Image (cartoon, rainbow, N blue to C red; front, side, top):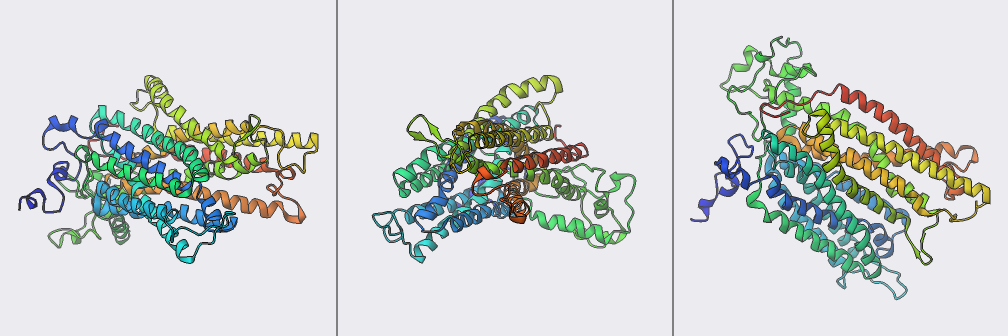
Amino acid sequence: MAEADNYTKDGTTMAEEDNYTKDGTINYQGNPANKKKTGTWTACPYILGNEFCERLAYYGMSSNLVLYFKHKLHQDSATASKNVLNWSGTCYITPFIGAFLADAYLGRYWTIASFSIIYVIGMTLLTVTASVPGLKPNCSPSGACDPTETQTAVCFLALYLVALGTGGIKPCVSSYGADQFDDTDEHEKTHKSSFFNWFYLSINVGALIAGSILVWIQENIGWGVGFGIPAAAMAIAVVSFFSGTRLYRNQKPGGSPLTRMSQVVVASLKKYRVQVPADKSLLYEIADGESGIQGSRKLDHTKDLSFFDKAAVEIQSDHIKDSPDPWKLCTVTQVEELKAIIRLLPVWATGIIFSAVYSQMGSLFVVQGESMDPHMGRHFEIPSASLSIFDTISVIFWVPIYDRIIVPVARKFTGRSNGITQLQRMGIGLFISIFAMLSAGILEVVRLGIVKRHNYYDHDRIPLSIFYQVPQYFIIGCAEVFTFIGQLEFFYEQAPDAMRSFCSALSLTTVALGNYLSSLLVTIVTDVSTRGGKRGWIPDNLNLGHLHYFFFLLAILSVLNLVAFLFVAKWYTYKRAVGTLR
């Protein structure tokens, strides 16, 4: 009976219930003095620790996965690459599952907690398949492996459990960290932007360790240990997250966002002949100070996309029953939720080209590096794929500079707490990314010039140091700090309160679509440039190709994308939440 007294009617613990207000937004356990005891940077170390360990686990397992498929599961290069791409793509689809559950039913805390456990189970099972006899593929002394169908199936079961687990963490953890800062408190709101910078830094520190130390362990010590360390890191991530439970500020889920948006569309279509009144205060809204959507503040009316305002126009038939039918009459806040999502889509679309540029680090940059001199000293050769470490170093270098130098300086000129707007930050990143493609293209022109002068056409590698690629990696890292972090913050700020996980999942899809776009461009370019028996832009022997044309093509597309972004940004209407500081 004493244990039952610790729970409320809706199943949350008393401790969790204390962190909610009546409308589902955060409070301070009923006492303003407790505000300093919850949320802000008091709670964030546990969230950042969780993200660092989770990313260490993810990249520690995925960075070398294609080699595990080839060497241990005995798959050819094409099959191994396809399986990695399919799995990676799934990791960017499952966030919609986690986001929907978080926004509609579970809340971000319980979504992260439950999916983290699934993640640990998947990582543990993967470790078992690489180390326990019977589940571990049988390999001959020469290294040739012959896995059974069961062993392969169990391995893929583990991987897709990880994909499901990451689907509950990716869209929620950044939003949950930002939830710890109060939008109505000017001091806390200033620190929220800083949180996104350090959040992205924690991702890259985890990736740096995974891409260097863990990859070496997998190739030189063993896959069992190489997968076991990421599994242990994920277990630590779970412990880190639960350790901060009493300090977190939570938001109650607001119900299905898809249902609410559908209601606005249906109600608008039913009233397509109804005139929207000139006085927008006549549009339907709940009279009291709280939103009708749990976990969401009221939103002010905006002028654009006025067709959907019809859903909030009251007519006589709307009041036949005691309470209005939400499929016939919607509140202004509900209408503005849909408008906010629609306004985000053009901004979202401009992120795809940037992600295509970003994806070159794992594809054509590596191919370009393979044709250059990899020596660092007389005896050590650096793999071309390892140069992506300079992108990570660039991010680690630029995040503190942006947060501690650029923002304070910009604040003096603009008067904005964040220095510049999120859209301005994203635009700067898009501009910088152009120079990454120009740098890669110019390097290729120089490389081909050396090939031509010295007749190195049949050489696999030419005497040009691979470290000349460092600038293009470093520039992309700088662009990331502006665009990807700005995108994280922008999609959080402009998302309706009860749809923030969904919008975080939406922003993540630009990475997947950027990869698909890059793949499509390579396919088209190869098809067109090889007509008439020509070798094409990207032949197996790059010394006979024109890889620089492809990099310059991406630079041109990036310029066009930047122009499109500037138009989108100029006409963008910001969400206006009642009581929010701008």
